[in-house]
Length: 141
Image 1 (cartoon, rainbow, N blue to C red):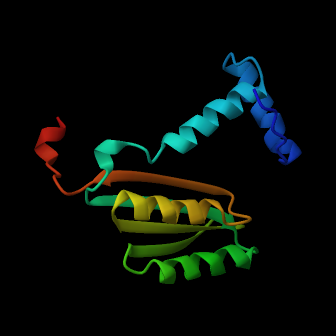
Image 2: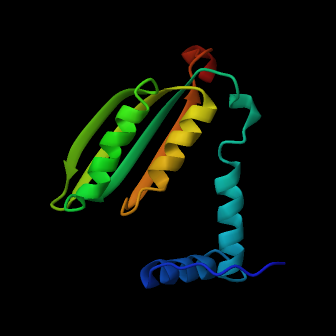
């Protein structure tokens, strides 16, 4: 097995070690391997390919980090055909939240989320994807 060196803030490393201990992992490498597999598999669900999808993406960042807000604006314009709606809100005393509603195909949503995740200084990125091409609320049970 190859050894990979990863840089991360001390606080994140402490949280990773604590998570590993609390959830019975043998160590941080096992947690990182599982997280990597999950991340890579997120958009590999073949049931979502070639379907009309809706995606919700939320991004949290420090309001003093104007580079994140500028990047969000550029991404919104760059993906104008994908972004159905966008909402900016102030959260607490120091944070901003950017919410994107996306309508498109898996490949486009995946690319958009990847660009959001790659944005330096974004504190959290969360998203969900659901098909809307055959939405039947009565069948949801």
